Structure formats: C-alpha cells, structure tokens
Length: 325
Image 1 (tube, rainbow, N blue to C red):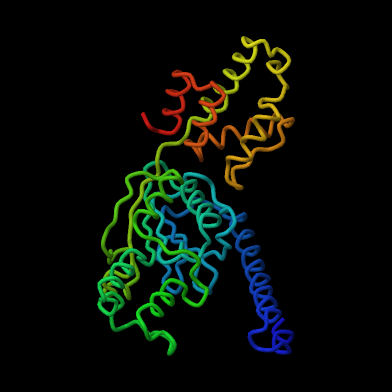
Image 2 (cartoon, rainbow, N blue to C red):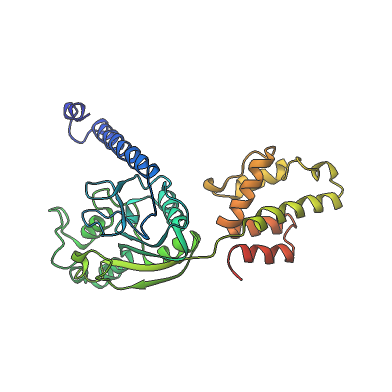
C-alpha cells in the first residue's frame, strides 16, 4: 500500500484515499487480534477501564487503544467485546473528539454506559471549545493555550490558531463545550454530569499546566431500563385502542402495529438515524418502538400523543423505565 501511495502525486485525492484505506486495513487487523484476545479472556476483568490510553497505560486497569503499549488493541467505533456491567470506572481523555458527532461518538458513549456497572463513573476529558471561544472573544488565546503549544507556521492569527486547535489537521472531528458534552452524555444514559479539575491520580501528567484547555467532566451511569415494561405496555395499549375503535383487523396479534400513513408521517418527521422499519414488519417495528422510547423519549412521547396512545399509566411506566422515578 505504501508503494502505491508513493506513485501518486502529493495531496492528490487518490493518494489520500489509498493512504486512508491502508490505515483502515491496519486498524482492522489490530482490532481482529484484540477481539480474539478478549474472546480468550480467562478469569475476572479488571475493575477499571482506560480507553485511548496512548503511551500512558494504567497499572491494574484494562488499557485499550490502537498503539503499542495497551493491553488490548480495539477499534472503538465498534461495540466493545466486553460483558455489560464490568467496570466501576472508565477513564477516557482526549479521545471523544476524534469521533464524529453524533454517530460514532454517541455509539462509543452508549458502549461505555453498557460496560459500566450501575452507579459507575465515567471520567472524560476533551478540548474545551467553550474556553477557546471565550478566549478568542476576549483576546486571551495565548493565556489559554500556554507556552507549550506549538502551532504550525501557517497558524499565526487567533482565528488560524482556533482552527488548528479545533481540527488538529483532521484528527479532531467535533468540538465540545460543557453544555454540548452534558447533553451528549445525558442522552446516552448518564446522570449527574459535572465538571472537575485536572486529577493527578487519573489524568495525563503533561496536562496539569495546560490552563483551561481541557474540559474534564464526571458522569454517573444511570439506572438500567426496565425492558419488560417498555416492551409490553405501549403495544398492548395500541392493540386495545384499535379494537375499541373498530379496527379489529389491525388489533389481532401479528397485525401491523402502525399503518402506512403513520409510517409516512414519521419518516417525514424523524431524523435519519431514527427512521422506522417497514410497517408490515411487526417484529422489527416492536423493537424500533422500544429503542425509540429509551433513546429518543421526546420523539416517542410526541408519537404517542399524536396517536392518542399515551395514557397516564404508560407515562408512569415509562418514567420508571427511564429511571426518572
């Protein structure tokens, strides 16, 4: 692959594509090796997980990355081959910004939520876009970045330096402030999101003097959803209401849960990642309703209200399933 790359002009789209393909092949090989290692795991897992440990693996932890010093090499864009509720603490420093938002970044946070035990903590650090924008507006970028930052020659003006800090030559795919990160974490099932300072026991030693450049937060895994309540109640109500309304052919077991018109309106309203399956597929539609109720409660609530299916008893069941009391 490197030989092919050298034959192409520097900066040519084809050369970039071949280079990216080579990187993906290398990542796939490392990931496959790491998954085989996890499958052979014997005995108990460590209680703490470090995601993206880089050159600073933590002793006694499970360290995951795609380098040379980690315990297991894994592609974090894929589900973790680790049992649910395994860890009491997950540490992830300057990693999340390398994943697109809300796609791979959201999936990674949901995986972290899955492998944490109830009440377990996620300690997360990302570049603080809010601090950078405030420093830009006040003319204090130099104080924010500090003397250790080495910008490329082209990054001279404050705006150029902001662009470099946000993009990192294409390595960074999203910039977070506290409000955005809190929303992202809450939607992934975390509660009690709060900011904290640099922690000598957890965070990289080199970041102790980086001023306000890094936004550190702590989030707690929320309660487990009660799937039985989520899966059963709305579907029973849907069939019962249709029976009372005289739509007996659509109230029988195995009948479509939503009609073609319902699906058409939903597809016009929902974002691409939440689109419903074909209305004839009863089993897929049931699973979709369950995931919609848990992952997108606002959209689910509006759907139930529009279909006149949102009784107070189901509202109480759903609040309990989401851990809202």
